[in-house]
Image 1 (tube, rainbow, N blue to C red):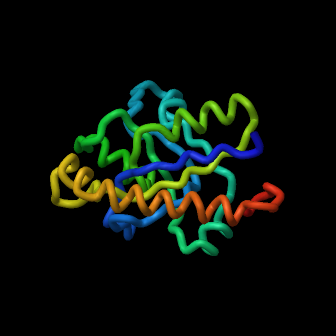
Image 2 (cartoon, rainbow, N blue to C red):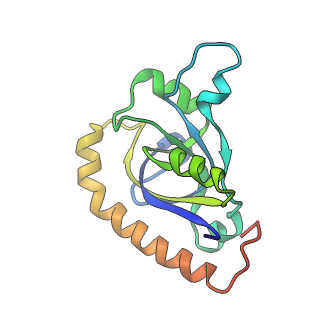
Length: 161
């Protein structure tokens, strides 16, 4: 493939201006819960990978941009929140890092498109807020993917998109 698009839902952060239904284009993929407390291994645990620069597309389509962090839990433990803040994450989800890693193995650029279902640094229980807003975020990501595909149609995949 010429490009891998990882589209889905994610938690957003009110501290970074995130709101339910916002769509984000990923700038970088990181991991927030691969904690390796051995000097020299921290970067391996975070595994920061730059996404294809799609900043022009994001601006054109009126999407936000930011770092997407992957972890293994829907809920956010206090230790994870510390790391998410340190990593300047705009969205928190559970799969993009694996997609980024696989894309790298095959030298294929990737981009994440994520719609916000819940506010990670908000005051509502995560599962409850996620279920309450899943339909809204799903519709937002559906519309976003169609807009992205229309935007990319006929374009050469050269950054910035």
